Length: 118
Image (cartoon, rainbow, N blue to C red; front, side, top):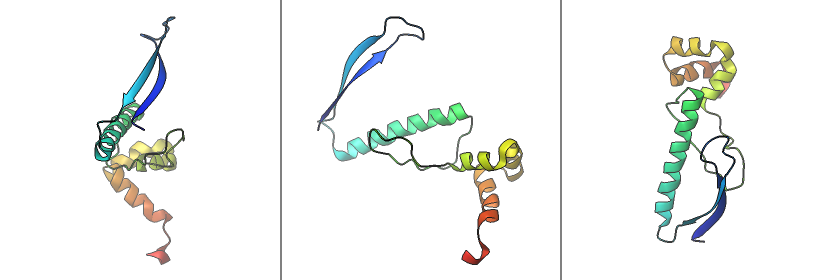
């Protein structure tokens, strides 16, 4: 399949009473599979950067797994999200103590590892 069409409903501004429906078609007939992978990775990076900005925390490392269209969730938890959940309102203090997310993660990880498995 070289084209994908979807009807987009767009408002010029919040509260606009006259949204416009646009039949939007993406034609990928001139792209190789590598080209498509590059575009997907670029779009995912832009999307993730927006999410990090909204959350106010930018991770130093993250792997994003692209799911099939129509599926929800990534099944992924970032180090930042995990530390926020574990540390609660002490999150900022923990980050200050260890210097960055990765160092804090490594320090706290040892509390949850079984010594016999290393």
